[in-house]
Length: 395
Image (cartoon, rainbow, N blue to C red; front, side, top):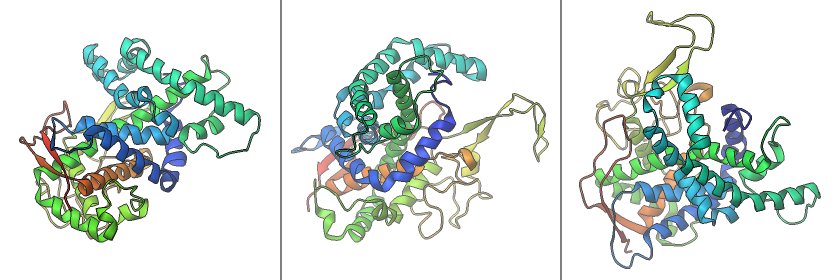
């Protein structure tokens, strides 16, 4: 992918308008496909089932729900499309680790390296080919209807349709429209799927590490959903944007989990001016120099944190209950989603997906750690580990 496909600002604009702005519209569909993916991962569960690691299951739920919103329900039933949403980030990361990883420390060279990997490495080329072939007939059908000004039937409600209507390829685009929209989807996958899967996995493992939390979250759900809480494997029409906002204890667990995760030096910024920038502490940033923020320090520093509980090296699940610090609220105390005008525009949808997953799992299953839960404290991986036993919840 190159600059002729899309820019980061293009992706941001689409997420703000077509995803975050339409969350209420997409919520029922996301719930439906998260539940479908959960059933696919666990089966009928007539007997208890042990999962070696939660990340693949969570990633499948996020990928299936995201595909239903990004490219529509028809393509969300296509195995190769869902696999592209699940695995293409891993394919690229694996290729990057195996090909001149030392170039990561040289910004301009690393950009060329990542462009080369995305364009020429066989696993990524094959994944892109399959995704492109899957979307071709859908795009053709939709464009034919649009060009004929055919208003019969329902307009497809997904981000792909928004892009067909509002983001055509530029006149200078050197490839075909199918490649253009395929590259758009990959850009959105990078922005949405992998990080949400990581965060959802972390939150579920925190519950397993601190099982005393689970009963409190179940009681909160019973208060919010009432008699519908026991509608095991139902349609879950009660899980909405509004009802999820009422799960304040779950939201606090989400924020606290992400506060203590092993993010260290992150959020690179480049001095794009031709002048030296002098910071308030006297540090000088020359033109072209990269600066990284120490997220770990900010998120563990009492001078930045806004609550009164202290002990910032400890995980305190309900730290943020009854104070104005929801899991989507950014600030110097919480750099998980960045800050300022470049903060993640899709964080509301990501947290809604995560809270939906947790809600469905707690309503339908009992989960227990069947091996020690380990949270990494290095910069290599953020994904916790531990075997998990799932059993159908009995009412």
